[in-house]
Image (cartoon, rainbow over all chains, first blue to last red; front, side, top):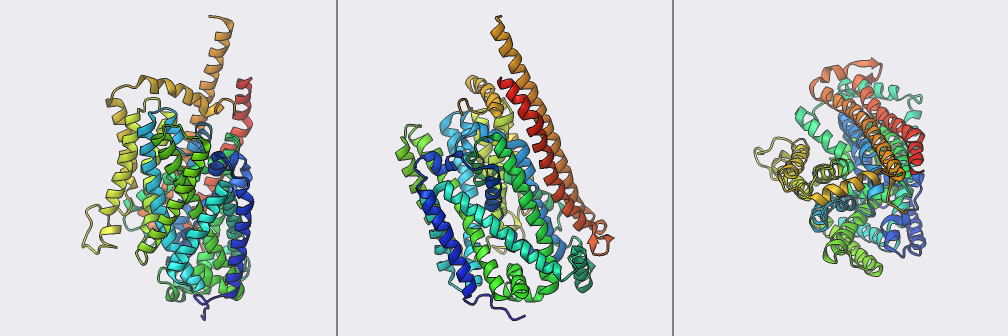
Length: 513
Length: 97
């Protein structure tokens, strides 16, 4: 089909500038309400459960899930749906095990939960390693994705696109803090859900509003095999390992965990996960329709001709069904999607740098609120510049694996220590810190030795480590390290005593709040 | 032991019981979601022909189970939130007094 993707598109530009104008307006409004550290980091804990549900969905649904899954389904059928399910099942885990204790035990970062029981300096440094490595790898993937997508969608250069994303995101976070970030995520979630729903309805209208008729048409044209598992999962252990990273990684993502501090209490935190799971689940169910819709109506060859990775399936489908204006709208939505995710990541990274490292370690808790806010803003600028620099450095590199690396580190470095610190009285400072360090290092090392880096990127004959994703090894390793070091090391009497307080606060929350 | 101490000990015991009950429910639901999801993944990995089978015209067992994993995950969060809002919150506020 004839496509205008990659040409400057007046409608796309119009929607894009409207989005920037609205979100900067929100930022201006939010900036006047961002005077304290509590407002900067967690929006003064005044976000409602419904708002946080949308914001969590906006923080989580990345361009990878919208454009990537639709593309994967449109070119290889059923296999793409394995990601749709995997990216959702982490949410019940977050709800059952983490969300409410986290809200009741901490203030700004998940390290607060650990710091309640353990010695400040080592635990804050350990948690900052886990947080920053997750954030940086996630940021690289988002920035490189942003550069190439926006170049394709709007026809501007890669570098311009990366700088544009970095600067807009910096404006939101720097001036509007968590209040602006939350609203950017809410606006993005609404736009993305509206755009995807409209696209799905337009697809289904061609198939008597019946998804099964669409799937049958796909099977008729491209063979029954498109409805069945194919080549993506060749090694069963790979599938299980990836599944573990997705399932437990969500419960260790710093930018997701931070959102639970923005609501007034544990009940709101719990309810917000229920809303978020519904919204995200609905969205992933729609990827079934969008992916097969693009396969039948646009065709896999036409999709690959525009972008070998298949990422343009959803925009092409929009152009086919709604013409250039709808393509423009969907392009602007994809851009908004990246901006919202990057803003959330930067804010949580800045909190780790300023709250965990500067205020708690360097200044040992003795920093007034002016200094805290100043350091938080400086950290934001540093991370924003780092994101732009990394985005440009990794231009043209295959960085898709960095998202699964970020999930694997979150699942192996952050999740085990956080879970055990809430539920296991026997955990010691050394156990928690060694679990976080071993989790982060072993994940990075095994990814380096895996076929993803050795074969796909460095073009070696084979890889020393057989799995593409190391979570199957690194999650148990991290738990075992925490337990073994705690049991074998010296007993910390004060830590054990503080666990009683942790147990009480897990349910009752902090006194006087 | 004074009466105040006894009342405090009783409240602490009730909180421990409530805590244990919440953890048990959370763990059972976690296990249910894990069984559903990893069951699906294991079928994808080890029994592709079964998932290729058609349940209805256009609907393979694989697509049906994939969609069911998503719907069941969401239902599990609904069950949990309902129990917490109805039972746990009430019990907790009685403990607070």
